[in-house]
Structures are given as structure tokens and as C-alpha cells.
Image (cartoon, rainbow, N blue to C red; front, side, top):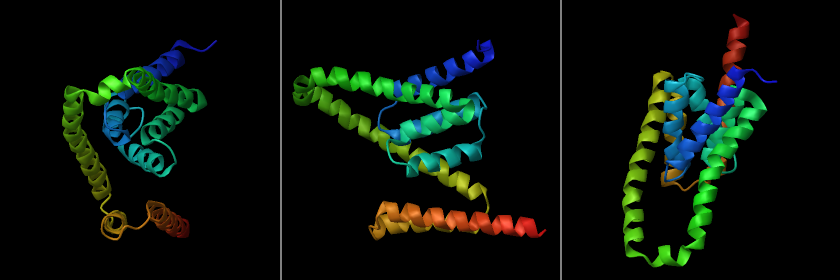
Amino acid sequence: MKNPETQTKYGTLFLSTLQLSACTFGGGYVIIPLMRRKFVEQLKWIDEQEMLDLTAIAQSSPGPIAVNASILIGYRIAGVPGALLTALGAVLPPLVIISVISLFYAAFRDNRIVSLVMKGMLAGVAAVIANVVIDLCRGILKLKRALPVLVMLGAFVAARFFNVNILLIILVCGLIGAADTLRKRGREAGK
């Protein structure tokens, strides 16, 4: 029999991701700052740097970033059961909403008010995504290291101005990160 503290943690993980997923509109980049607020600031289950790392892994993994981030956070906090619960919590609301909308698709598609509401929501989504970018950049700048800043700027320039394939950018950034980590470990081992 599981102890009550573990059951409470499982319940909190599931309900938190269920609530976040049900109340966000605009995709994974919108849910990331809300997850940060919930799991880093409120619950204090993970720290800021770990959230940045989990976000980077979620973004570079195949699939929706919101689900990937939920799974990684759930696994980090409560292992495989936590990952399964957070995945379910992240997937259930969109699944239900899309299922209901699909029943009434023709009515939604042609409704002028629904169309205007959706256009209005796009402005909010853009603001939230801009907030995520600023928060992630702030986290990188706090490291006070030139390499992460140069990698971040290089990745942006490559994607925005030179249309470099995002998979290539992720691969190169991963290789640079791995080389930097190995260099730091070698320097620490030499001390």
C-alpha cells in the first residue's frame, strides 16, 4: 500500500497538469511558463535550471512540447508513475475538447463569432510565447557565460535568416553542449 504522501504527490501531479492543459490555449510554448510557475515557484519540486534543461529536452524531442515537458517533469518528480500521470493529465483535456469540437465542426467552421474569438486569442498566444522566449533568454544570460549566449544567438540567426533545418540546429547545439560539458568535466578532473 502506498503511503499517503506519495498518493498526494501523484494526485497533485495529475491535477496540476490536467488543470494547466485544460486552461491553456496556443500550444506547448504557452504551457511552459505555467508549468514553471507551478512546479518551480509554487510547489518547489524542481529548480529553475532544471526546468530550463527539461524544457530544452522537451523541445528537442519528437512530439508535442507540452506532453514531452509534462512527462519529463512527472518522471523527475515521481518516476514512471509520475510520467504516466502527467502524460494523461496533459493529453486528456485537448482530447476531450477536440472530440467535442469535431462533433460540431461545421457549425464552428462557419461561425463568424468563433472565427473572431480565435483571431483574438492569437494575440494572447503571441504575447505568452514572447514571454517564454524572454524567460528562457533571461535564464541563459544568468549563467554569465559567453558560449550559451552565442549558441542561442547563432541558433536564432540560422533558423530565422538562413532557413537552416531545425533538426540540424538541434544536432549542432547538442554537439556543442556535449563538447562543453566534456571540456568542463576534464577541467574539473584535472584539478
